[in-house]
Amino acid sequence: MIRRVDTDVVVLGAGPAGLAAACAAIESGARVVVVEREERVGGILKQCVHDGFGVARYGLKLTGPEYALRDADRLASLGAVVMLEAFVSKAERTDGGCRLACVDRSGVVELTAGAVVLATGCRERTDRQVFIHGDRPAGIFAAGLAQYMINVQGLLPGRRALILGSGDIGLIMARRMTLEGMEVLGAHEIKSEPSGLSRNVRQCLDDYGIPLELSSTVTAVHGSRRVTGVTTARVDAAMRTIPGTERDIDCDTLILSVGLIPENEIARSLGVPIDTATKGPKVDQNMHTLAEGVFACGNAVHVNDLADYVSESGETAGRSAAAYAASRLKTGGRAPERRLTPLDAGPGFLYAVPQFVDLAAPRRGELAAFYFRSRATETDGAVVRMSAGGTALLERRYPALRPPEMERFELDTDAIAEAIAEGDTAMPSDRRITLEMGRRSAL
Picture 1 (cartoon, one colour):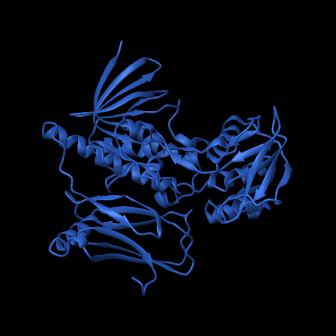
Picture 2 (cartoon, rainbow, N blue to C red):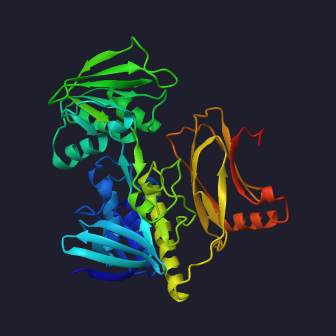
Picture 3 (spheres, rainbow, N blue to C red):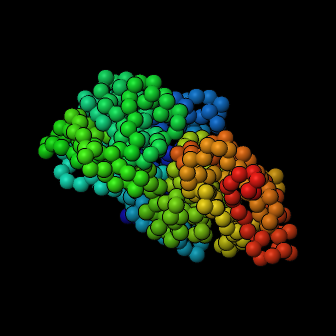
């Protein structure tokens, strides 16, 4: 028998983004149901035993479990309805909001809500996605799986490991495996610069004498039942292997740290437009996607450097979803007016989030958070400038910008709205929001 539950907001995912979103929505007066596929809340933080979480949000260096526990306890104290070991089998938008069919141990539950928050996180790229084909012997692990094995299950993935890629999880696992007695032979990065944060390269590789090979990749994996070794090779500027540079390395474990992708299958089923740069939904400053009543946050929108910023976007999404659901309830199901103005990021940016600013209802004195990554490394002092309606709103100089390191700034949404309103009397080309990068003299 299908159970039917009507609520204001459904939050999909109970990692740091989902926990923050659910708490913020409840504290804003909404009825909330949280759907989580694992048996415990906390998401990936449950297996992150290293510290460094919470510096921006709490001013403390917490481990992943300590960080997650704060919001988990907060959510429990608010009396939230949390469905554990539950999966969404169908999701659709309706005239009144959204309807989701979920399956848990009790059977099928149909949830109807005025708003949905997508806090589904991200997933790791696999060996097939980076074109390592052929046999699949035991001993090939995504970095997150190796982390789960060591930190949660108390198991070693092997004895002699080589890491492909230099993403942050892989760098952290290089240190973790070394501390657990494994021999880490090195990390091989196909790009000409590391993909992870500079501090992780220093603290996890340099401090432990683990070499980082740039412009290098794995071209073959050897072994039938278990990995016995790999072949590496140098690559040129076009990332093509250079003949004659091949090298065979004996190892029993290959750790993949080759990037993260936002998890957005449910977003697509709800008709949410996806940004080709971030691989996540396009959102406004309220984390509202371009699909009415669907909000998104955290790593489902773009891969963040810090869990603190994941939680920040979750709180924004939760508050906004609660306000949206309350507005629809008050107006008999009518969606609130939106006036979306796109944020045009210049060629120097890999991406910028949010991609839109909603000018219909700016909240006086409220600061909107903007995030961006540079397309290339800039070490000569780049200047980033945001303008609206032809008026400069922000100009900030950065000593260095690197693609792996996300940058963040805040702007008053009222200032953006007022600048656009003034620009309405000017040329049509001024009725926009732009983000530019260059030198101070050029801007």
